[in-house]
Image 1 (cartoon, rainbow, N blue to C red):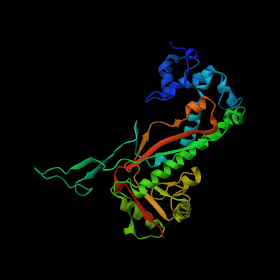
Image 2 (image 1 turned 45 degrees about the vertical axis):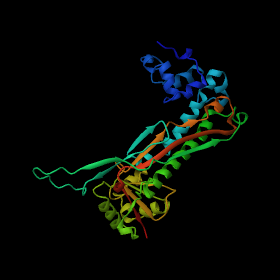
Image 3 (image 1 turned 90 degrees about the vertical axis):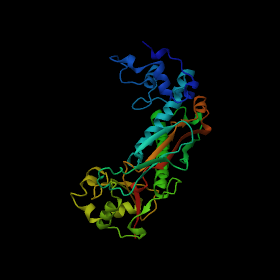
Image 4 (image 1 turned 90 degrees about the horizontal axis):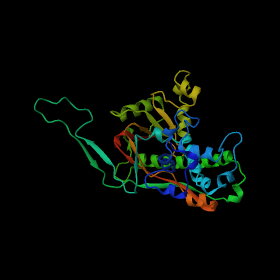
Length: 336
């Protein structure tokens, strides 16, 4: 049985290709070894926090300086930063409402695939001895554009050393929330403008601006067929206008929003608020097949600087890109 209190920690553990710090720790100190013990339910990183008696939250939260009581414990600090930022990303993340699948890659070059059904989406019965309709799958002409999103942590160890970790966690979560919102902005830009393969969102209503009404929502639902309209994206002003529709004010139709804050339209699609979207534009999409998210590695931190307490300019970033899967699964409507 491995013992967590004998594992030697070093900064090189952050530099293992294809593995996170926690994954490297798990190989050295498997969680399966702690079943039916007091440490059951803790992962390898959490056991290291317990080893050095570092409390990162709640009553009795330690100060930042506690991480730097030894060389070994200092190696835990970048993972703490990464986990706090990830919590912020998850809390502000709207991408699960937009993305059909996530592809993780090791490099920066990635070419996705596209599918082209032969003829119409509605296939007639195949006559005897006739050929089956074909669906052609091919790679796209252009690579997926990858964007780095992140923040530079500009402070000093002296300014932070006596600050409580739970307070510092709040700051790091906000960095994560910023990254998540920036990634959502990139995703919406690809939906509207295309991914570089001549596939911008098709204009609904023949490209003519339509008045915002329940009737226009029904027409959106019809125009997206044969795809399912399950998600709508809109900016702040447009969301306010949508929520002001009579059908949304109805006690039964608006019950979900009034009771839970989740915005469900009268036609059954989730309404997602995207503050950076242009006004008077609504995106209608089928989230199950419209968009692919591409991740180049995990969340990256300047682990060298963080371990060495050089916090003056320590970066926290993530590299992602987006590609359309079926272009017809997302369309836009301009509101008059």
